Length: 126
Image (cartoon, rainbow, N blue to C red):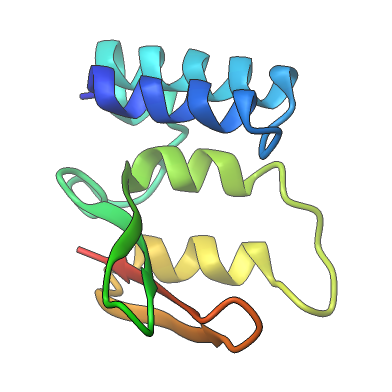
């Protein structure tokens, strides 16, 4: 179920220019749909329960101070739905990511250090 905090984060991302208004509207629509009927609205055709109650967590921390700059939890059903709109390219295989989500992958999947800004970006599936 989508929370007000998740909706606020989407609106904040639009305000900051990280998302276009159209993308923000689609995400807000999907969040509303997830709240009403999670499996069909999120487009989950995986075995029952594979994504239910699980989250895609993005955490950005300043490596020098240790201060957390970003912490966002997104329901996996919404991530699966959003990945349908990511074009295939040689740097990112959206179809492979969707399959990994459906098979129940958990734990840290990304741990990257941005040396220029001094930020550590971690992505987890919980």
